[in-house]
Length: 111
Image (cartoon, rainbow, N blue to C red; front, side):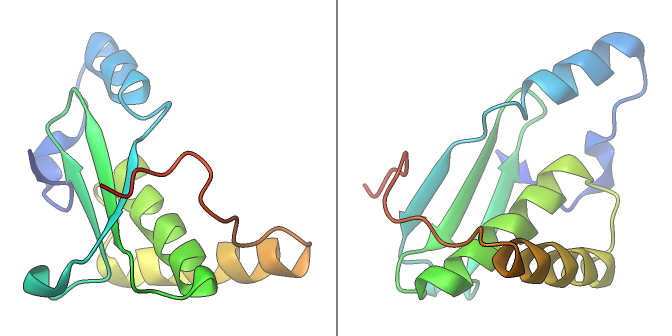
């Protein structure tokens, strides 16, 4: 899989748009140490499937924000990093304020 931050993943036809959405309906999330990547989160995309990996050493609140951040990369591959960071801050802080926040170990692959 290639990193989603590349813009060649943008759908151009109706079928590609359907495939793009289908690949993102249920994105697997894997928690593992990402030290060698020098990142707290990664979003991998090969147009047919998407995988999000988050560093397992993060606090629950930081994991929550990082998952939102990587989901934004998956949903909007053409967004700049600055736009994704702004979106993450707005979404994470509001969800947290509304009582939605970190959930422990539900549906997450820790292998």
